[in-house]
Image (cartoon, rainbow over all chains, first blue to last red; front, side, top):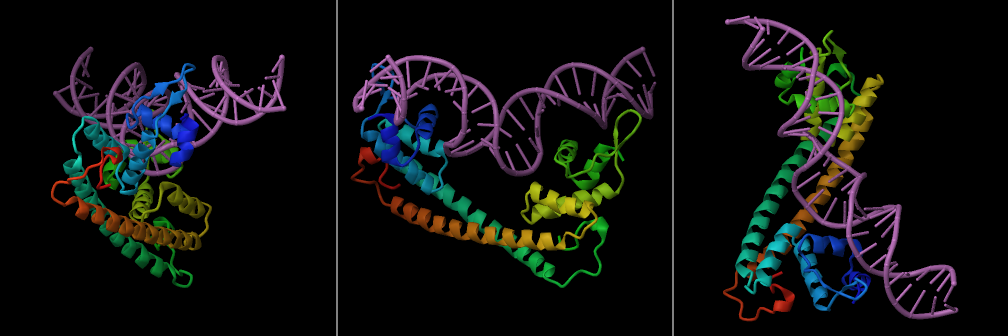
Amino acid sequence: MRIGELAEASGTTTKTLRFYEEQGLLPPTERTMSGYRDYTTEAVSRIDFIHRGQAAGLTLAQIKQILDIRDRGQAPCGHVRDLLDARLADIEKQISDLVALRDNVSALRDAAADPEPDTCATADVCRYL
Amino acid sequence: MRIGELAEASGTTTKTLRFYEEQGLLPPTERTMSGYRDYTTEAVSRIDFIHRGQAAGLTLAQIKQILDIRDRGQAPCGHVRDLLDARLADIEKQISDLVALRDNVSALRDAAADPEPDTCATADVCRYL
DNA sequence: ATGGACCTTCCAGTACAGGGGAAGGTCAAG
DNA sequence: CTTGACCTTCCCCTGTACTGGAAGGTCCAT
């Protein structure tokens, strides 16, 4: 399987696949006599896994950690649990930060809904912010 | 007022102030005979405004838009309202995306809380993801 | 006159996940 | 035999908001 076929089969681009290889997420493949990369179908499930990891909000570096553990022949379950835990805490914090921000911005926006401001101190640039 | 004093007065760094000038958020200042930047106290409120804008989640580019309008002698109120509206919609979307992500990750994490997996298909890398 | 604290410019890099495009090699069809 | 689609490596660019550091000039006190 050439790189273009793999890209199509896994819903990504050749650029991305070469980038993944460079980052160590995909192992270097066999090459044909003319130097073309030659993939097995195993590569497809590996890329699918990468996509599932991304969908869970993991970074490529974290996904690589999991793949490295698996490539050493171990089960990455424990590490995956830890990563998911950390990710979950992260997401919770992002959510609560965003909710606080929304409340602020919402209040600002409501104030700005006023009819035209009679007092608009130039020095402060904008009395609504 | 030299750049270091302004940085202290406005709670930022000299690096950042030069960066803001370069980006057009701060107008080029007067210079002393030796080439030092010489700020008026007006600069402090301008930087405060930038900080308020950032606290509202606006990008420097958006803050610059507001400052540019103000610098042309107009009242930026309308534009500020639009920006806040857009920002609010953005935040709402980010929140709902994150909530959906949290639910996914949370479900994955719960599945991963299982005792050790008896079936761990190597081909899939990790049955928890 | 010398040290230290300040200032100047410019160049480069950070994190993240790729994308753009050049210059050149290869393969199958017409 | 040539055309077009594919492949290779290479290096730079994207956006965001800065940060670090080098090389050199200035100001003030000792």
